[in-house]
Image (cartoon, rainbow, N blue to C red; front, side, top):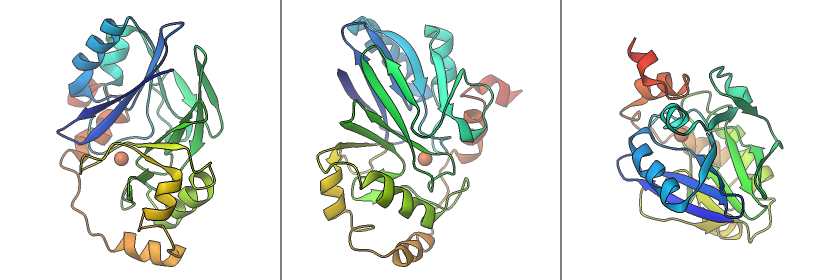
Amino acid sequence: MLFRQLFDPVTSTYTYLVADPQTAEAVLIDPVLEQVERDVTLLNQLGLTLSYCMETHVHADHITGAAELRKRTGCRGVVPKQAQIDCADRFISDRDRLQVGAVEIEAIATPGHTDSHMAYLIDGTHLLTGDSLLIRGCGRTDFQGGDAGTLFDAITQRLFTLPDSTVVYPGHDYQGRTVSTIGEEKQWNLRLAGQSRDAFIQLMNGLNLPDPKKIAEAVQANERCGNVASVMA
Ligand code: FE
């Protein structure tokens, strides 16, 4: 498997490129509109064909590159079914598997940051956690149907039950951290390790974070699969 972690410094967003080097089929997870040129150049340089671009959730902090990538590469857009976004080509539900050459991507419903959030487990070893579990932290739960108790249950029951050796790749990091493991997060993620569900809810509900700068335009555009022109119209 070919696996690359790509970074957008403006929004601290990680995009992941996963491909089967044998068949040259590729998928991009959580692409960022402003980085489409970077992504297309890399695909071309590596001789890969983009089969899918997929989202872990409807983002509030950046606009997805999905529409632009679909236009430029003919790839199919994949979104969580429960997000009820009708512009995508394919909808993915809990435990659905998507095949990209010999690479298998399994969706794991992990609601709480948003109500339709998905984590993606690649070949049983690489876990893309989106904005559910972050390195030593977790996604916020104060908008888009977010719910702290739901996130606690999703992380502790669905992600922390995976093998400790599972490698964790988050959707964001604001301090330059790139990778962790389930075992490491179970021990050192202080929002969750040794915390009760009630304590977690209290902590999350008291964060009082400012809204992301681009929340209004980002959510609107992402509900249209990143089709910015239709938002402007
Ligand atoms: Fe998010």
